[in-house]
Length: 326
Image (cartoon, rainbow, N blue to C red; front, side, top):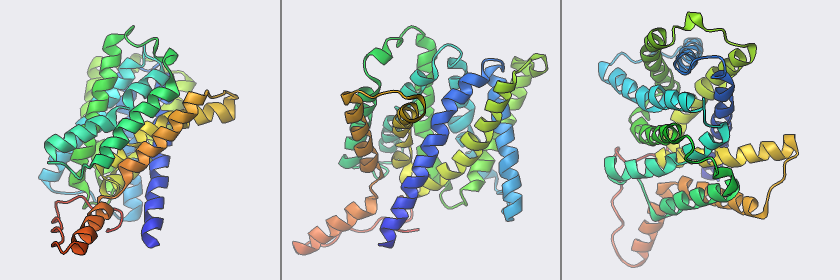
């Protein structure tokens, strides 16, 4: 019973992460209206780093001192913030927030491929593959063909969002290297590393002192940095260690139905039959991608014991920890 409670808590966190990152596209759209893209993202990472450092100090948590860990944090920052944040902010100058959300929902596919290629399988199962397919199919049904009419009209911007998705997929797999750390440590370290790259770039490229941001853009930036970055990345690194990279990137699918739900509840929008079907497929996909590998392994062991066969050997410490074992 405790195991089920643990899994339920992780899925609630996945929902919170999906909401925080789902809102980020609209916040970015508002932000880039009067703030240059690189400056917006530099400020986003810098504010998030400051907030997370304050939380760490209040908790008495120290930053790592290992050069190897900081080198890895720099790689993580490039994959998870510097490159994708900047590409999405640049793209949303011409691409709508909705279409950016759709294109960015492909990150679980890239996480799946990265797990196969880089992590020698990384706990990938047929069930997770089914989850990837169900999530993509559900997303297409929710959006509908008409919503993709603009696809191709801003090809380079749209490709930039897809490249950002690939970065997120790779970051989810690479982030497993920090699973032994308190989740706030890699979240803070990656934001510090990202700010160290982006702030000088913003000064050279945008000359931020020449900008005149609106109040709406500034408020969007603050929300983007605190909720969609500082809070979101702390949850993200926790889920990488519990649900694994593919399960964590399932939030990319959840962003779409969350956006639809907000429209129905607060804007009075209606859903078609195919959209409701799509929501069902997304839910099925998320469940499939977040089923702990430990459960499947235990079933295989029980099956082998029943047939008089030796139970499969358990993986060592390199195996992804599940939510059943912390």
